[in-house]
Length: 217
Image (cartoon, rainbow, N blue to C red; front, side, top):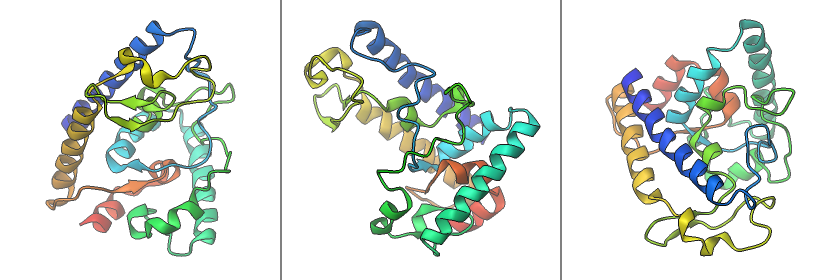
């Protein structure tokens, strides 16, 4: 599994390189930086691949800090199970109808991510999920297809970034390779094919590998 995660890390490095290039080309239009936590609020789904990669970073934190975060994550998940009694350990979203996901992660939720430091930086920045790296700039493929046409309101206040061709990237290819790595991970863990296993960051923090594997097998 470490080899799969290493390859995923290399894929995430490509995303970071794209974001750095975008920032270098439009420094006056992009406010995103390490320490800005405007988008690090509420809950959002990440893949099991992201969860395993995130845990690499989390496991490197000091033990007292880890214990504090685990306690907070457990409390957050307990609150969510009160919202939806079907949402229980191992806290996978795939057992919940997508129509019920909104109740678990309402748009108005501005609760800070459990992995934010007191100064607003991410405690596992180098291991943060894919979606955290993609947030802030519209995702437009090199083909011109708009995969996600929204962006942070702090960015591009003077122009429409959808018209900036130098922001484009091979997102279709990126997401295809991400899916292939995810399938490889699931085959390695369970021997069975699976295209999607999603969870929240608090669930990634407290996840029990054995329970996860049993649940997706």
